[in-house]
Length: 165
Image (tube, rainbow, N blue to C red; front, side, top):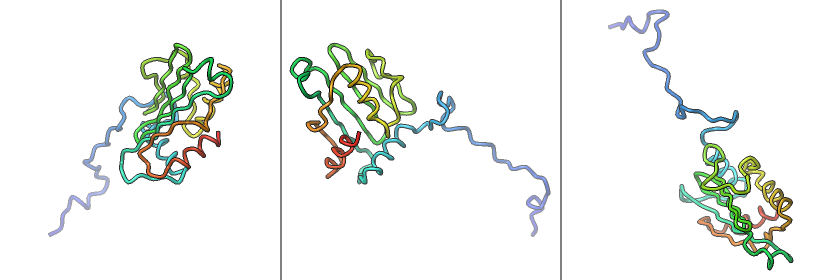
């Protein structure tokens, strides 16, 4: 038996277009609704690292070096990379800025140093380090950075990343 429906010319599909997965969209052109996870995944692959687990993390805490260390020991920079987002936390004197990137960069709690607008893409994170060093006349001691990670054997690659800024 012949199905005459399939042979009708010009028949429109009964399927409706699928709504966007991100109905609000992103305010910056060129950013995907998955900017944080994609950047984190690219960071991981660029360093030749991988994870057996879908959720992984890298947390790096960096203090300052030289003569300023004794005078201003409360200056710290913490870099946080997770499978689903990335960000950084900076403390200098009594002020804190905490920026996270999921879909777009945003302030997590406080941005006392007005760093949100200075936030570069993850692949250029060294830029914010230079901004902070210049603005506050400090030098981060990447050689003594504390690293916590769920990625087995990743510390050498992470230290190399810090040196490459």
